[in-house]
Image 1: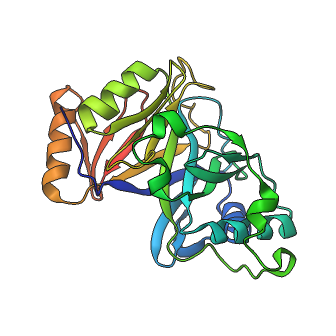
Image 2 (image 1 turned 60 degrees about the horizontal axis):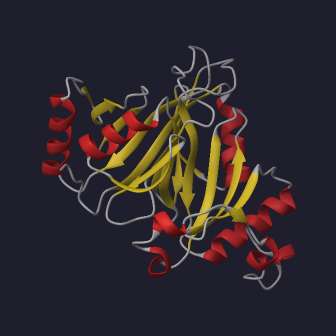
Length: 281
């Protein structure tokens, strides 16, 4: 059976946006990312030198539709206190949230950018609490915001300049057309392990025993096609493999299915059955 090295993790996500200046203002001010490079209708953003997000401008693009593509990308902060600090900042700056959840494996805050791309900012609970039991333990319950803010001495005056050092792309949750085909591609071809399934509605997969690096759901996209041209959309999700050999093997497994990988300057790009593009970096 196909298997990915346990060191495999997620890398930057690339999105198209309607107005780059508007998006840069949002991601700097509301989210706390730093602009690394900008020019030619493109910008790279990250945290303490780590690239997390690439934005490409498509002037006038319509908001991201309910189709296959991005459900949300998830920024993992290094500790619970960092999540509390971001929440206090969001409350002070009146940054709109779309949801707050306790997943047992993690505590998560949800929001949408000006183009309706989904974002999650989250902190993991200690791995020893959930490792090996994700299927039984991962859930969605109301998040105790008062308890979370209790990590801070003075939430009202907590200083916030940017996301905490050590923030990474924890996982990417995709909208897919069908769950069985998604499982066959991400598990049987790429080599992720299934950690949890919700019947024909959602699946969560990971490498190395993490609760999930990739999620797929059909809540808004069952049987859907990729977003129409001219929409803000997910362009690329990055899967970072630890060495050339594991990357070569993954590419060969994809090619063996008859889906020829696309060679790019950044590395080979493959497509899942829903048309979502993955860079194997």
